[in-house]
Amino acid sequence: MEPDLALDAPRADDLETARAVMQTIGNRARAAVVGRDDVVELVLIALLSDGHVLLEDYPGSGKTTLARCLGASLAADDTSPLPPFRRIQFTPDLLPSDVTGTSVFELETNRLEFRPGPIFAHIVLADEINRTSPKVQAAMLEAMAEKQVTVDNTTHRLDELFFVIATQNPIDVVGTYPLPTPQLDRFLFKIRMHHIAREAELEVLSQYPQASLSLAEGMDRVSRDQLLRARRATRTGVGITPTIKEALVDLARRLRADDRVLQGASTRSLVLMMPALQARALLRGRDFVAPEDIEALAVPVFGHRIECAPGIQASEEIIESHLSAVVEGLARSSLGS
Image 1 (tube, rainbow, N blue to C red):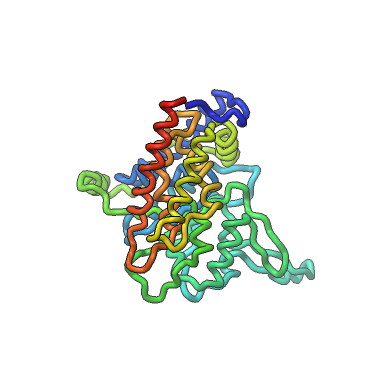
Image 2: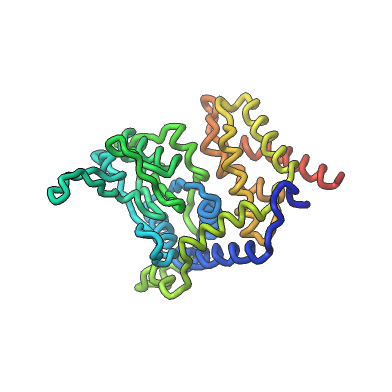
């Protein structure tokens, strides 16, 4: 399959450098979080494609460790004063200013000075995001969508690298505020994590008493600029053919026309999926998007965006039923070309 001719011809060394940057981050994450290679890959894809991730699983499954490991993968950067990683523990009594920051009157200058909140970081862990009020969730929505926050009618820009990993517990719903559809739509992926395999759990126990994060401490790090360059190289260097774009549109239209679906995939979700497909192709050693990339990412991208009819909960099965027909059409078009 040939890359899209509308894209500039990539430099092979740019793509190799981008792949090496992501491999460095991935090696650290897999060393600290055992048995989660599939989740690590999706998080790396989101990080590379400038998306955000919502992790859903029970406490103690490694969500926080994974987020902290990503933050620790960034080396100190003199060009940016922001910390690589911050964690926000969401609670019902949290205020928007506790996240975004607030203006404080300084006696020395006789002026209001803005003090940034914990959201001003490269990688932010929003822990138990569904436990906070809709007002705080709305503040997060602006940050995730526009990479900016507004405090006292003044807009403050976040860093270009800004990346959110949010978590929520699927079982404990008492005292929670379910994320509204616009908030869910800002997450590139919603990843449902499951218990790791027996062998992986034994490996975790064999590491005791060494802490998980300490296993990756001596490994290489990457800089903020390296990661941003990797993003740009991926977007300009990995090709997407017109047939891939047609397949995405056809899949979305099939989902919207399904009687089991009340609300189908939005056009925005298709736009967000494009760089995600490119990122997965890069991680798999290709400079073009293949049908297997659509197969791998369709459920994580569309699963939390479509609303099923009453009595129907398995959105994954609906997506996969239409996905097979779309992929078969892609295969036929490739054989005919």
